[in-house]
Image (cartoon, rainbow over all chains, first blue to last red; front, side, top):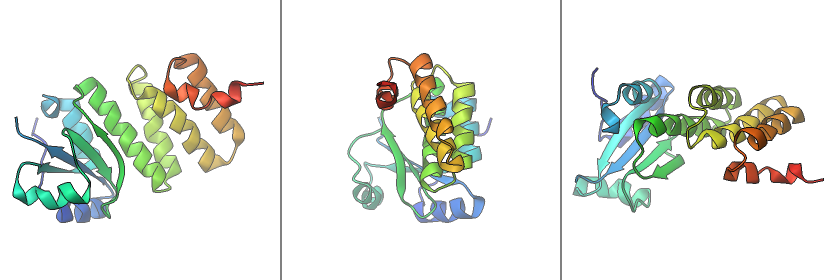
Length: 32
Length: 150
């Protein structure tokens, strides 16, 4: 199965969510 | 890892546009400050105009992460006044994940979503009463316990 296609472009993600009638999932992470 | 689980991938891909921000990098600092971020993991579900409408901290295994994602989606839909959409997702949590940690929250807000759509008091009260039998030890049962008095 293909992995999740994460982006780090917040503004583009919001725009995409509006176009696709989806919500934005924002994951703040800290590399271990 | 939670993000390599097939059900997690399916749920995120179908319902969300996923954004990851590394809190240790300079490029992430504007969003860290904007969202008052303090501890990871930190997950937010946002409306398309970038408003945080549900969030949680802490690692969850896939069996808890998927229902948590669904509850976050449902609460966001409810706050965006899509009551039928919210009720459908809360119902999905109750049917697919009835023993998950967030199931009592789903039962509480399924009642709220149904009532706010129908304005029929029985949609609220009958569904809240299910907390008394299905999830009697839950804080969400306590939150409707005023209807148990008298």
